Structure formats: C-alpha cells, structure tokens
Length: 610
Ligand code: ASP
Image 1 (cartoon, helix red, strand yellow):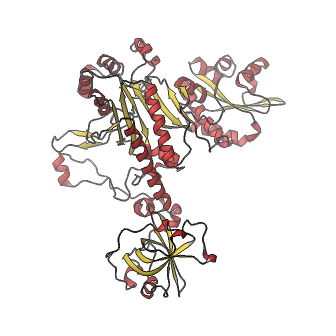
Image 2 (spheres, protein in one colour):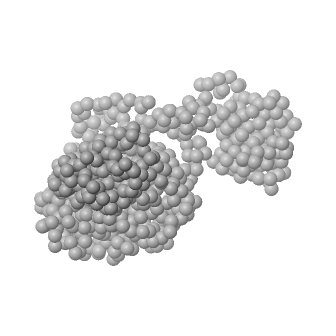
Image 3 (tube, protein in one colour):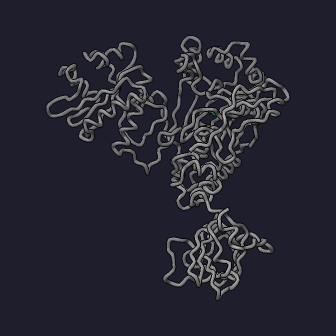
C-alpha cells in the first residue's frame, strides 16, 4: 500500500444515487452553466493550496475540475488527499475558464467544472510506472499491468478503432448476405503449415483436441451444408516462433462462398477493406486493386508480397554471368541457379564501408555473399572487375541499366534463395536510400501461386497454401507428372509489402482432392484417417466454393500506424507466448494431470521476462 490510501484518513464513498459518468471529454463551452456529474480517474492533481485543480480522465478524454472552497467547502477539503489514478466522481457546474488559462490543446480546454461535491469511489496504490511515460517503461512491466497500460489514451484509441473496424466489417458482410457461424475451438488438426496447440481429453484419455489453426474445413463443410455465404471474425491458434507481427492466437476475418470464382472473393475482400479503412479513418483504398501473378512478383521483386511503392526491381543476369570468367557466378548458373542484380543509379550514396556491411548482412539472410560493381568514369570498380572483358561489360550494362555513377549489386545461388536475398536487399536499399513513400498505401493482389513446393526441411512436396486449394483447370493434367508446375487458384492480398490475407478456390470434387492428397504423399489410409469426413462431405453434393481470410490484428496495426500487433490486442502474449498478467501458461496440478492420464517428464517453471 502506498501512503495514499491509508494515511489520508479518507473513507471511500458509495456511488449512491449518482449514475452513469457523463463523459469528461465531452463538455464544451455551449454547456456553460449546466450542472453535471462526471466520473473518472485522477490524471493529474495540481494543489495550489487555496484551490486544487484535477484533470479527470475517462474514455472520452480529460476535464479540468476545480475544487475551490468558494464552490464547495467539503469537496475542497477532500481534494488535498486525491492522488493519481484514484477513481472520483464530482458534481458541479460547467464554467468558462478564465481567458489566461484556456488550453487550446484540449477539446475541453475552454471550460472547467466548478465542483460542489466530490465522492472518492476508489483509491490507487502508486503505479508501477507513470502512465504518461509508459512508452519508456519496461515492456515486461507494462505487460504485467496490462490494465494500466490500456488506460493510456493511445491504447484506448486502438481498441476503440479496432471495434469500429470489426463493426463495419460485420455490417458489410451482413449486408452482402453472409451468415455468421461459430466453429469449434476444440477440434482436430487443420494443416495450415504451423504446429498445433493441443488440449488433452479427459473423457478419452490419450487423445487430444487441436485448437484450430483456422476454421478451414468447417467453413468448407458449411458450403456443403448449403449456407452459400459464411463469415466469422474468429480466433486462430498457431504454435509458431513469434515476431512483432505474430501472436500464438490471432484473429481472422474469415469467409467462404459458394458458386463463385476467385474474382467474386477478391471483390468482396476489397469491399471489406474499404469498409474497414473508412471506419478507422485511414485513406480509403481505390478498388479494384492491381493484380500481379506470383511469377511476376517473384521475378521483379524477389518475393510473393512485394512492396510496390518504389522501384529497384530485380534483373536476371544469369545469361551474361553464366558465360563469364567469374567462377562463383558462372557456377551458380551452371548448377541451375541464377545471378540476379539490383541497380542503384546514384552509387555515391554508398561508402566503401557501407558496401562491406551489406556484404556481411547478406550472409545473415542466407546468401553466400554479395558482389558489387561500381561504374565510374575510370571504368568498373569492383573485386570482380578483372573477370569481365569490354564486350561483356557492355552487355551487362545494357541489360541491367547500370550507368556511370551507378552501382550494381549481385547475388548468385539457387533460384529461390537468390531471389529471396535480392528481395530483402531491395527492401534494405529502399529504406537506406529513403525511397519508400510512407504516406502511400499500395494494395495489391498476388495470384496464380504454385500449388506445391519442396519443403525446406526435408524436400518433400508440400502445399503452398493448404491441401484443399484447387489446381488451375488447365494444369490439372500435370498433377502427377509435373506437380511443381501446377498453378493454384489462390490469391493473397498485400499492403505495402505485408501480407494481409489470402485464400483460394477449393477442391470440391473428392476425386481431385484424393489426387492432391496423393501428390502430397498422403496415402489412402492416412487420407481417410485424417480427412475422411471431408472426402465424405465432398461426395454428398459439394458446390464449387472458395474463400479467404484476412489477418485482423495486422490490418489494424497497419491502419493505426502501430509497429506491433500487441498494440492492437487487449491481452497479447509476450515473445515467449506468455501472458505476463495472468501468468499463463502454468503448471497443472497433480490431480489435473491424473484426471487427464498424463505424467509430465519435465515442468519448466515460468520465469517472468525482463
Ligand atoms: N484458411 C486460410 C488461412 O488461414 C485462408 C483461406 O484459405 O481461406 O490462411
């Protein structure tokens, strides 16, 4: 306990017949003379002896209340005891502030409340961090006292804005005939590419439920059930390594439609984004969004979620480099890989040490290295210069657009790796050179993803999206013979290089679903064990259908200009997937384990993060 509560000698008051607050931040000069009751938290108290000023705060804002013995002697007496974050109610009259004390920064800055009676509803211990300086407080402390962190106007704004976004999206979906259906939390594994969170069953010892990575199969089955348009703003749970824009549980705007093609799903999604952007007060996107195929996105930008707000596009110099004397480069091409480059016109922007730093950085993202060539009036300056004859130089300059004064960065390696390093290099160069117009918002569809890729871990064929994604009709014949060449009817929506969400047209024929499972190495027994219910459902009259899911947290984060999704989630987890406030996860009791038939091999005590 701080000195405040015990040493003040103040007895708490009951709310009594006072009701309802009254919106501290809503009073204006047109209310002068009105008798009102306001309630809220003491933000700041300024005790001038004769008169005490308190900024009272509620979710609508701040109001200066004045405790002057001339207005209410009892109220003034109690005012000396008030401390930050006490909960107080005050009755009084709205009055104009003396001209010299008008605060033009505050919406209520022209008025104040002259208090006649004050009631102390609750006291507060001294806070572990002052709210005004919360941004400087240690993250762990803020997470532990999340309710205090949430008292900050900025966090309140974020939660309110998020509410406006979901309300607008729900209204739009309702208008467009979507039916909101809740799907189970206790379910079985849905392959979205992440690890599952498992919940042991007490009733069936030895068995577990999986928390849903997405409602994918349920929403498809709702289409088989004849709902035609399903939507849900739904929590999904994936056990992945966490980053600033990833949480173990996150929210999706999830939808599924029958008797449609990709265009219809994309059009609804665009309308959702327009409605959400309008609700949050950010720039409303122009629709329809531009589209780009996966092949074009990876070729030009080295990624399937390109930030198209600036240039620095990739050039494929494999043909020129493959025939050169530069062994490392030529070998990469000979092995079926590539040499790609990025040209920066003003090479004087890079010092030698910056170039060296970039080379070192490239190794941290998986490259063997990074080469550079400066074009100067004296010719090429580069560790590689000696390998290129005049004619070769001209060809490289012609293809890449390297001109005098410019610098060409080169990455060699297997196609996917080199593309990805170049894609990341492009972002890095864009940021270093200040080329990213942060005030612009580029929404983009990326389409025609490959259906399969090789898993990075073991080289097996895996689904790029998920195994229920429909192959392009014209590629169906190659499913068995050339699976890596089969395109999917899948689409992702991207904002400024960040994936907002994605979806696909689904397989609605059991025979095609079984072929895709087979291509993924899922044998008949496993198909019927894991997905029998889906294959069954598809065999009882399934309409053609498709859908998409948007990541709501990420969307709100971007729209609100925040840098972490934790700033738009009321009770987020820490980087270690802990809830610092409730201290989840926790060690179960012996009895709980016994009931579940589980013996723990080890229990790691949850340590508070600092
Ligand atoms: N279930 C997918 C996901 O969560 C989205 C979809 O295909 O609709 O990424």
